[in-house]
Image (tube, rainbow over all chains, first blue to last red; front, side, top):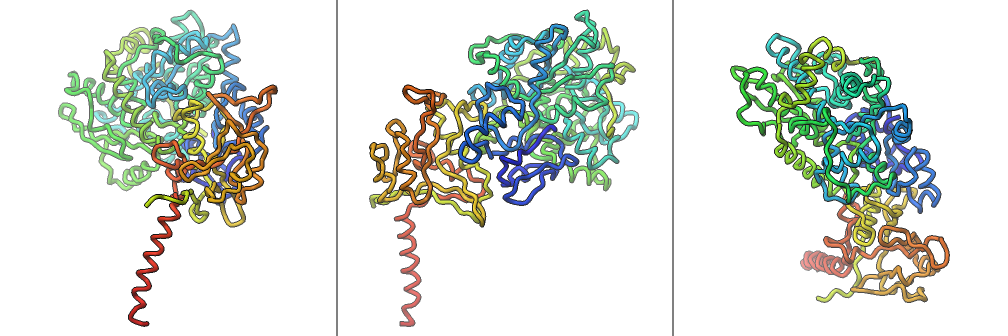
Length: 453
Length: 187
């Protein structure tokens, strides 16, 4: 179980069914709902929407503690619990931290640093990478790494793949594969188009695979010594890291994923005072990242990051304007033509999974003329993910998403490096380990195939 | 004209889905100051105490809340002076409430119940015991909230509305007068 609805708490309002992109929520109006796990893509938008809380009046004084226990939530948690909820793996993280034989490595996704502060009373969308690194260090992880680094690596792998497909005549359009809910949706509903997905793994999995191989080598460890944790804005990342095939190094790429909200619980549970945390750095070398890595957290970000590097891969020249504004925005489907030397690259960006259906249908009908399409399941990309801090009132949703998005772009603008291929950590990875993007070893560790049941 | 009758919020069971967004919004706006509740769920450290109550019944569901009665039975029943009329609305002072349930008994709509009292982000204990102190939780029409009743604004289906009874009566009077004008030719 990744996402579920508690039959005892659900009022049957079906507001969640309105936001579910996979039509997975089933039940009569006014009766408790169930999730059809054959359809569910585990995006967690139902979790974000649900307001039906465990109530003293409706469920009794004892219910809150009982539900907390059933869901494996730390005792220290005091916040409201709702009918729709995601799995909580904090017990596994705590056990690993307590095990002296495990070398714990943590990574956190770009969208976490623009939202986690909200659960400590910071204003919406506050940018807090330094506090995040400091909190993870105080929790006791042995290495504080960052998903933004493997996001940069994803650009090298996926960008190279795209250039090959375009110049050598591969399957087009190519779809991004970073969003595990989109991948699951495609596998469930459109398995016939699986060859259109980039074979590159998501940043979470790429990070995991590197930490247990090259990372282990750097620290004088083996993959067996490392316990790899990821902090994600996403409930489906918990599913993705458990996919059976995600262990090409011989070890699980990522051992366990927790959400932004889970991490906020853990920080509180350990008595760490968020407000007084200093700004610290992520650990080297896999804590170095570029602006391109951090914009993975917003819709259009993967596309923009890919274009910043792809332009240079094809033309040998830096992209004239590093802010690729034509692919920014929050509309459900937007298109742009980007001139790269003699090539006119036609790209599309889909956000909100329901918006991908007409795109796929057009592609199948032969009326879609695009080379590369980014797809993100959540309304405005990962900043609006199912594992992000949950708003008490829907009226604040637009403001929260806009603030998290803006903070992401601010972070990008302020970083010294803004293109993935300029990252010294990326250069080190290829120089000392992978040789070159899409090399034999890169393919073995960092790429995958789909529709494995 | 000076407002003489208290306003109130009323629900519509033909529009309500039972989502409890109203209860959540009610709790949120009443705890943003005193209990440090922010904009996200993670900032909440106290039990969710609503002042209106989603009610399921045979034909559907809707929230039930205080009518701000003019001859308020709760106000009349309270022996501790914990309920008073402020700007036409019936308001509870949780500091004075002893949790005797007289107001609950008196209210014909079930619009009052006793729920945990929290201050400064913590549930308040009773003096001389660890038991949680309670207070009569009922609608105060968001008297201190900019923008008016949060429940009305939070409802995704416009199933709640703020009623100004005197203004609505006048409107009906005007409609009735217009209708009567049409009948003049027939008299």
